[in-house]
Image 1 (cartoon, rainbow, N blue to C red):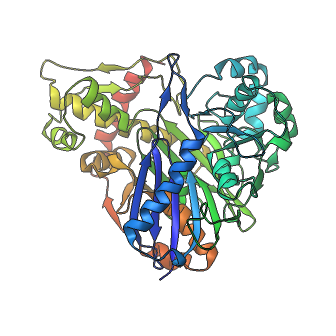
Image 2: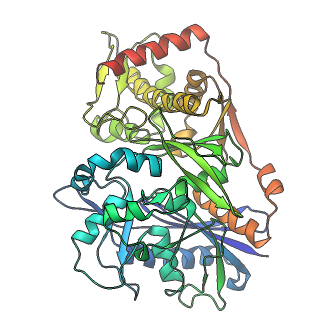
Image 3: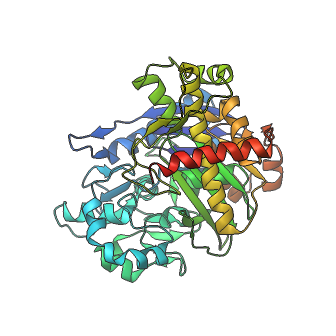
Length: 481
């Protein structure tokens, strides 16, 4: 039996999943890493810990599966996006990684504000400390000057270490999120690099997402070297894993926040509705673009209910409570706990609960919290329709909150589309592993995705009720905009 190894290096930890010759997940191993948060709220990860954990996760999953190491033929990697690493030629990290959530580079974005329009035109994304360009500048300004600096996202760091410095590469999906790549030329942009003070020689080579990125024996764990045949940012991996390979297909990953991503094909579209444009991937010399909206509070709303409000003891309780709630209750929760992201972009917005009555109770507040997830995602979907000029007919979803039947039915009815909930989890690792397996010739793409299974939700809300709910949400949003 032949196996493909899928690695998902995410914000909370590293997963290794082994897939068999039919594309079925065999075993999974998880290794968490520390969240380093200082008194100023800066969020960091230790790159060396991430690399060690990657090796450990592979050892653990092979041991769990009880398979021969000789049967592993290739590897695919998906990674947390935007988290930024700095290292030297010897492969030594020169600082802790600046995590995507961290806003320590805000001052850098502010001092470049006069170039914001030009940056948006070149990169498809608003100037923000969220993206690696500002983080790289911050690292460069706060690290002792050394020759041969290597800047990159987590994929590049892992590739460099796994190949013992032979591969200094990234793929189109990750490069397009750095704010240093020109989405029109598909290359590092000389002017952007000069503005941010980053040498092009300090950046990895941009490659197709299904390139041979190099070979690794995982520091001697394997008796032979295997090729790394796929690299994708985690949201892009989920898009591929969901089978959203054609123009107009949309996926949503419900996690702590949410990434809503629409494949818009081979032509660049600049958003006028508050979204970002980046690359889905580059495969066999062709790129696909995406429109994307990121939301800060989806699953995190449920965490707020549990840990801060003590209204529930587990996320699983929310479904039953939402069904128990009075359907006529008009409460609206606007979860702007850290401002509002796409498509509103109101960083100073404040969260509030609006429209309560004397009979609003625990169940109604829980229902309003779940509804807020559906409302935010529906707004991003409407922005995608405006930018693309296409009506979205279906939405493919994954992530923990996607197991909530109330939320999925509400999402379907509110957005007036069919929701397909993937039966399998860990779509990011699966997408990278599937792409690696296809590249290796082990999998046939058509056969692989024909086997995907989904739970289906169809709209069940009248047009009048849908309009009434949307009007109430929009009235609440006007209070914070």
